Image (cartoon, rainbow, N blue to C red; front, side, top):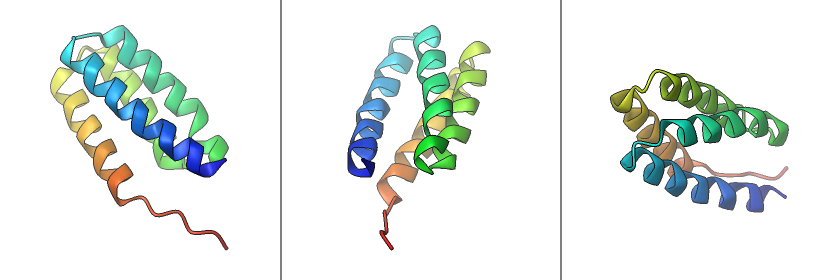
Length: 85
């Protein structure tokens, strides 16, 4: 399940970038809400935290803050290493 979860997060990142470019704050808020709910379910609390922050910044139409969060999310996903024990 985890590889599929990670793959979906990469798709989600592209969705976030597109929504920001289009100024779709409502869509950004929905994506953030979804992230907030699903991250912890799979043991990725950082995804949930970022989702909550995205949701709040989308509600405030904070384009600069959203851009920074999306860049941070991209960095997080790029550095993410899943280790099975």
